[in-house]
Image (cartoon, helix red, strand yellow):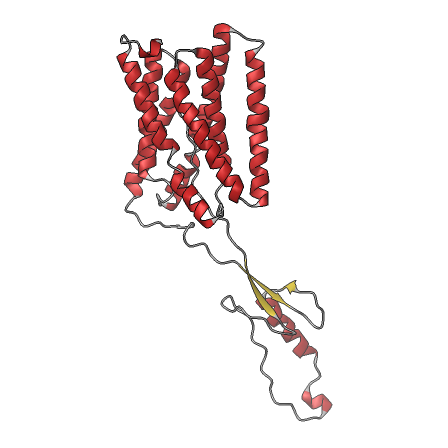
Length: 314
């Protein structure tokens, strides 16, 4: 094949290095999925990044097949398809019913519908160089969207001054991968491969710069580690079996109104009874139940916020 032609030694070097570095990028989520298997729970992780990565790898494989002489592009995206399929299978195995249903919808929408539509719309009506060009620019569009996805993590780092969800190693390998595939596309004179990796390079550099700025800074808004506890105070009023949410202040006002409506001791000409202490009002640190004034504390669980990892291997 022309890809192994000795007249293109640097093309071969960039392609091989791009494959090796992209393998490390594809394997970056392995620790997270080992934890999922150990805990037998997805723990709030999302399947969207892995479904999008599978969709992107399948598109680049299709582009490489119709372009021809791009064996190194086929090899890395074949590996990506296999790895992402394993990730998604593990996620579906341990996900809740709702998360599993959402993942299946994503697979049907992106792979079953959109990918099939692109394949049919470009394979039969188009041919030759026109088909390669159309599919190539579709891949560029998807790659730009994939590379733009981690921008939410960049904004989160600036806001919280925490680099917990933006590890330096991953940013470093993403930057190297973008450099290798940019060189590969440049030597191939293929703008569809080179162009999206320019964005990938600058995004990787921004991530590493932010890591250098905030790696020793104490977070000012560590929302991921210290989530405030949300408490709902519920009081059973009267003999009703229904429990209604009531604020502590409302309970105090209600007791004061009841006391005001009672006739005074002078009007009744009776000795005032011994002062009875008011029932204690539940505060945010109590977690107990009481009859006829039953107070229950309900902790609203907060979803686990997880880093978004999307891989573009071309």
